Image 1 (cartoon, one colour):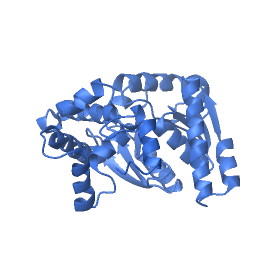
Image 2 (cartoon, one colour):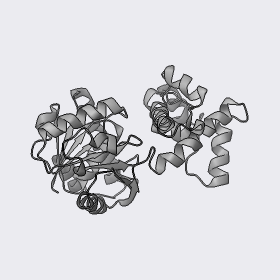
Image 3 (cartoon, helix red, strand yellow):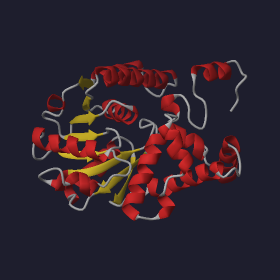
Image 4 (cartoon, helix red, strand yellow):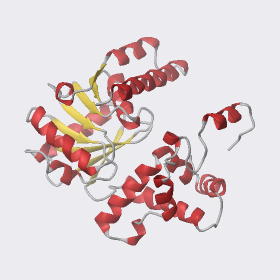
Length: 296
């Protein structure tokens, strides 16, 4: 595999494109929004600058990485003659099914089709294409250039050959691939999301405040980030979507989203991406933090 296409230039998509390009793969970054593509490339350049500053890569490495990325707004053009497509669009089943139906039309029959979905059934996604044995899950962790884990999800029809290819490819990206089977939430989110949801329930029930809950989990359980801060980082809308998929799949009330989470998403308080979630990420608060007045 030499030529890669990544669909979606948001947080996960630009991180996946950055990673492939950094390891020498010719990478097509595709998004229907030119503005989103420009922002994605700015984020990649900024992250590379930080890596140069920390002496993790050279200036030449940065230039080569950026040269390896080509942006497209047309899906049909972006996936032409690639060996692997990694879909990293919004966590919406109808959107993903629509994309994979188009990939079935635009891609060669032997192109491997992967989804970065964090919870949606790979088997269901694979049903949208004519040869589902080539469809697999590649669930990267955020931030992609830093985090080592990739969950490799086998759908019901995913072939052994495709699974082996993707496991080996992940290792070439200096990732640690873990093969899992196709059940709602896979492994990472089946365990993580109930913990985050229970943390929100703990806040909702008035047991403790946001910082107190996060402090208990950081200091008592050695978590690098508290669950409420992590939820903000993931995106509260994404957390809600994953819980809804798991609740629908298992029909178990333990996966039912806390009413506080539902209300916050409906109010547009989505975490870091919207500037406010359980914590305040607005420009004014950033300024206070820089001046030393804000320490949370």
